[in-house]
Length: 91
Image (cartoon, rainbow, N blue to C red; front, side, top):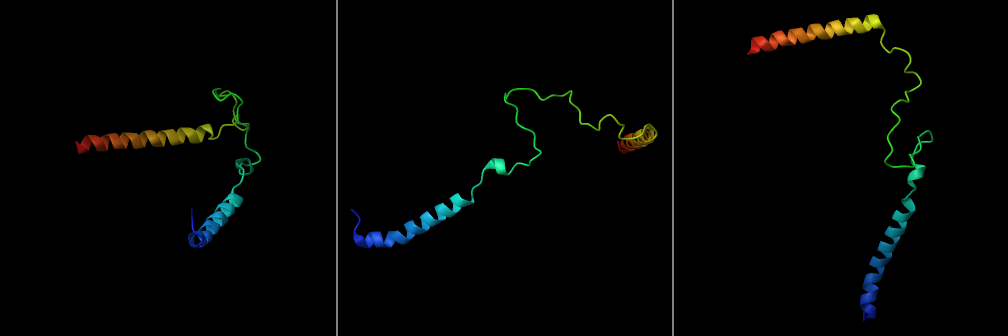
């Protein structure tokens, strides 16, 4: 049995631990409060596949016009050819 003197020594430590536990408990929050309002709901079946055929609404328009796309592809092909020549010369 603890003597009164031992109890008086451990009482402040126990009180401090209790205060820390209460303070940390008051800082906790629900995870639902942290999610954005426009977040999609989780599927009810955890193993279901995502709908791959559903596209974003603005995907019907071409992002890069065809003439710019051809220019970019030509630049990339030229860069690839230059690197191939440089790699061949390095050997």
